Length: 327
Ligand SMILES: NC(=O)c1ccc[n+]([C@@H]2O[C@H](COP(=O)([O-])OP(=O)(O)OC[C@H]3O[C@@H](n4cnc5c(N)ncnc54)[C@H](OP(=O)(O)O)[C@@H]3O)[C@@H](O)[C@H]2O)c1
Image (cartoon, rainbow, N blue to C red; front, top):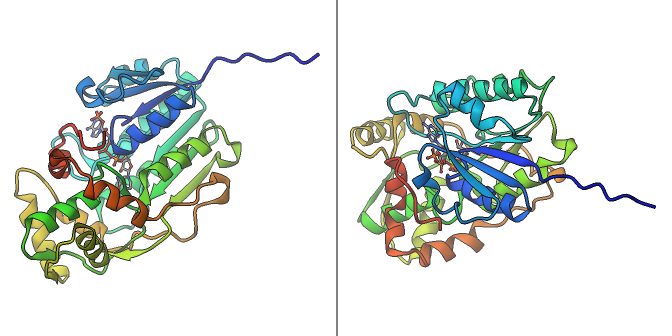
């Protein structure tokens, strides 16, 4: 006679679960029956997740170690998606990309939570040209240092696209609102990957012991220069704009000018990140079981069916305010 073992569903705590990637992943985890706890600075940021039946949103200041430890208590697995593109006040790259992952890993050890999945970025390297990429590399190193005690998986995606994204929507807004496009780093290459595919990689890895201790690069099926991406967006929107590619000096000057604006769309550090091509060294690892979807299949749908408010999503995100366009 076989006895069916009844196990309680795992409780997964997600830092950054209300963001662009997080919202997609949380929906998948909820559907799969996991108990999901989303940590957010403001419950308001997560209102689109509150109706999901297995999801609990907890307000937490992750910079406060006691609050973070209390929020992680009772979790079986932890996913850290927190990341920033621009520094602001105490929210530095060092704090968010290096010290926070270190504290998360330490707390996981203290609480005996063995499974930790972490989001880094493609081309993160301690010798990278930007603070963003350097700090992401330090985060990876600090987590990997705990790999004797924890079952860790790290993901390093290229730029991620999908409804409500920052990148393609920003390019679309430039095309819509500017008569001429002065494009920084026009030759830099990206390998954009669909947010659903990224979330599916996390899902595949979650219970798969073959992914423990591994770091995965994630990219889509095609590589594009930045100029080609702008041209693609123009073709989708049916708008033609002259594109003037800026050389390195003018690209940095544009980054500096944009840093002075109240809403940071671009910084010199972002320009420095684009000194390296954001392309993968290999295809997505077979154990993740994801065949990435082409941008051509997905992007027209959301750029052409964007709500009137969606045009402002990229600006709202750049300002660090809640996003509504992804819903
Ligand atoms: N999107 C891309 O193209 C891309 C490419 C490569 C790597 N990544 C990495 O993937 C991860 C997720 O990216 P995403 O596009 O989903 O980003 P996102 O939409 O900006 O979400 C990031 C989340 O981080 C949290 N967060 C930001 N600053 C915080 C702070 N100071 N304190 C506490 N929480 C903070 C926010 O949570 P609350 O507002 O709810 O508190 C937010 O939901 C990041 O680590 C990012 O670096 C993204």
